[in-house]
Amino acid sequence: MESENDGSPPKIAEILDTHRGEEHIIVLHDYPDPDAISSAFAHQLISSAFDIRCDIVYDGRISHPQNIALVKFLGIELVRFDSSLDWKKYAGAVYVDNQGTTAEKIVRHLEEAGVAALAVVDHHELQQRLEPLFKDIRRTYGAAASIYAEYLEQGLVQMDKSHKEHVMVATALTHGIITDTNGLTRAGPEDFHAGAFLSNFRDADLLQQIMNQSRSKKTMEIVHRALENRVTAESFSIAGIGRLRAEDRDVIPQVADFLVTEENIHTAIVYGIVAGSEHEEEIIGSLRTTKITLDPDEFIKEVFGKDASGACYGGGKASAGGFKIPIGFLSGGEGEAYGEKKWQVFDAHIKQKLFARIGVKEHATTPDKCPA
Image (cartoon, rainbow, N blue to C red; front, side, top):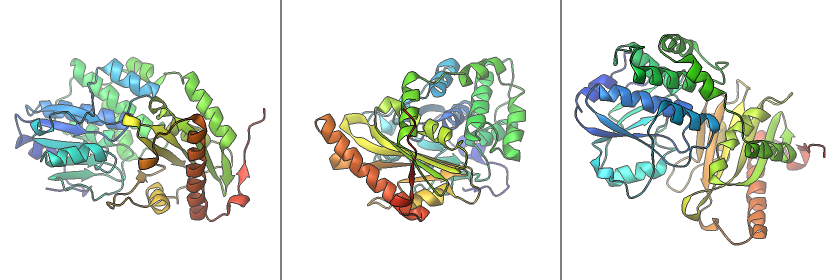
């Protein structure tokens, strides 16, 4: 059963109804954002109406202050990836705000355990990683949270403002829509409609507390590093920010959001080497653009290509994208000097690929050093 934004009413209720009483896993993309977290929270609520228990599982870390506040204030229970989890206890998997390509480690464990993909609910460009029973991909929507708001409005759960969990879900979804549409500046009619529906149930004061989290001192230090290291070419701002701790990974998209606001810049690309679990390291990057004719998904896939299995290293949606490239054998190593040499090699190689795609030579770029 598939529905790819064909205008028909969502049929996810039919899937859930035939799986009553089961235990499911809701899979988030690595380093989940408010849109993913809130959509999973809503799916958990909807599933409970069908007597289905769900665990929300993610890999990576949650480190952005707003994401931490979202989970803490709303009491959202998330399970961090662990290879020793009892994967076989799940009767099915649901993927929200992703199509498996950005949650590869979890997908592989589920496939090895024989756990079928039941549903995919997303708003990104179509991927071919999974073959779910049900697929609802709305590429014109600014957020997956808008899709789940529509499910709620259509009666999958009878929303009641006196019900605390309903208020929490509505508040989370509102935050998901606001953040994934860049403060509603990238919102479409469906997103505004979803926000209007949710406004009947969300807690405005709680939402304000979640959104008014201050940037940490470490975040500001990394923003300064990006300003020192960035180069510009053809209205692109490109910043390599060196090696980061895993807990600082969420700073990368924040820096990209900041750099794209600079005058005469339409696209910002920020990346760094992020330390992962078990001494693994990855190149993590974010792209933000205000240029309507630039497709982030196409751009990232053209620049970075695919791995040996055919999976793309990244992708995107309207105005935003991201990429993750495992370093593999070169992960770790002793000493600051070695780490710096490794960073210089990767930084130069990534810039070379980006410059080639943009159509400029490296010597034609402008280094933008902040004044001392």
